Image (cartoon, rainbow, N blue to C red; front, side, top):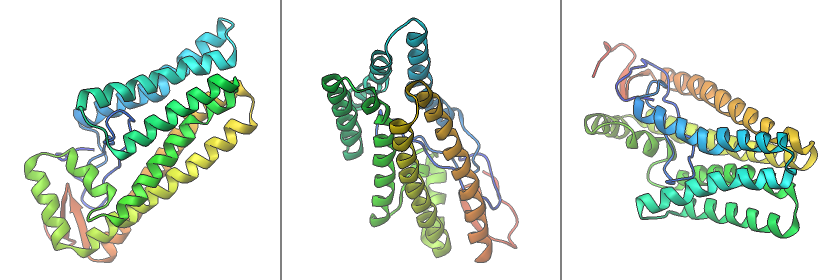
Length: 253
């Protein structure tokens, strides 16, 4: 996750959406977190997973109904999303969609009293994220390129831009891995909805977080293998954000 660490032939990690700024927290070129990206990812997981989960099971232990406990947990990520929009003083399409679906889910659940509607809110979020990742395939640069650019300094941004312009194989690898992430998020979303609609209410929140961990670990591993193999097949490797021929000596910095 850092522009300063180096991985000679792997692919950099990818962000996970925090739902607060519309800008995912990204992993860097080596898949090792910098303080900046690591802190952002920690806050994201705390707001969207840790605190709601602890609050849900805490309230259930105190005797609250599943609906009340889930509703209380849903307020935390919703408040975090609103805070992010206020702090940045702007809102993008992805943020608007996430806020809209979260607010609508909470409102519908309040009217119907159905806790299962609250349980599927994370599924909607993953669907939005996956759809946005796939939509970036139609843009000038895909999701992974823009995500990495946001978390490296100016010098490494220039190196990344040079690698992008110079090596078509690097560009294709980023398009491919961005597509993998988008599809995986959509699959994750479908699984979340199925879990929410079929399993016992008290089991779903914990399994939701387990699924998140499984999805991220699997994607990081697959992306690393696919990216490395793709670059090697075209006689290339990476050193940080720099792309080099396989025979070239390593670079630092």
